[in-house]
Length: 280
Ligand code: SF4
Image 1: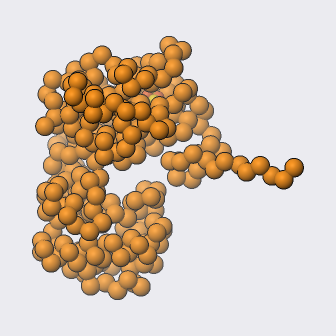
Image 2 (image 1 turned 135 degrees about the vertical axis):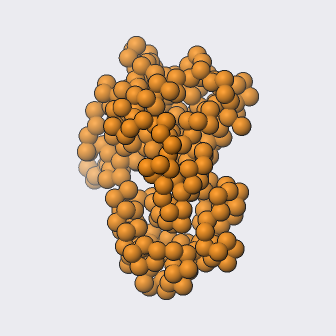
C-alpha cells in the first residue's frame, strides 16, 4: 500500500509539469478524457516495446483497422499481421506475441482484458509495465506503469534509488500516495522525452529543477546526490529506503549537457555507439 504520509512535493511537481506541457489539471478524473479500449491498450503496449511512439501509433492504426478485437486478431494469419506492424521492429516476434495474447484472451476471458494485475501478467507477453498500462489507460485504475522515463526521472528526483524499472515500481508504491499514480506516467514520460532526456537532460530549462535532487545539486555546483542523499521529506520509510537505495549503473547525470543530435541516437534512449579506433 502506498504511504499517505509522504511530504515529497508531488503536488507541486505534477502542477508544474502539467502547466509546462499544457496537459490540463492532472486532478481531472483520467477516464473522462482519456479512456481507451483496454484490448487495444494491451496490444499497443506490447507493440511499443523497444520502439518510438510514432512507430507504435502507425502500426497500431494499421493493425486495429484490420483486426480491432481479440477475436479477429486471434484468427489472423501471421503473414497478414507482420507487415502491418513492421514499423515497430522485431515484428515477427511481436506478431507471434500479440496473436498468442489475443488467443489466450479469447479463450480465458472472452476477449476482454481482465482489470487485475495478477491476471493480466499471466497472459503471454504481458509484463508488469504492460499490465499497469492496461489498468491505468484502459480502466482508469490507479497503477504505476514504470518505463525507462519514469525509472530514470524518479531516480534523478531522488525519491528512489533503484537499478531496474521493476524495483522503481515497488519503491514508488511505497512512497507515492495512490492519488498520484495515474497522472505520474503520462507527465514523466512527456518530461523524459522533452527535457529530462536520457542523455543531456536540460536541467537549465526544467520547471521542476528546484524540486529535483539532481537539479539542486547541479545548481549548487555539487556532484549529483548519492543513494543515501535522498532529499529531506522524500517520504521513503527506512524499509523502503533500504529496499530501493541502490546505485543505478548509469546513475544520475554528472552535469547537464547540451542536447545534441550527435549524442542522442534516433530513439533518444541509448548512449551513442562508441567510435572504434581506426587503423593507425
Ligand atoms: S532538474 Fe534535470 S535531472 Fe532533475 S528533473 Fe529536471 S531535467 Fe531531470
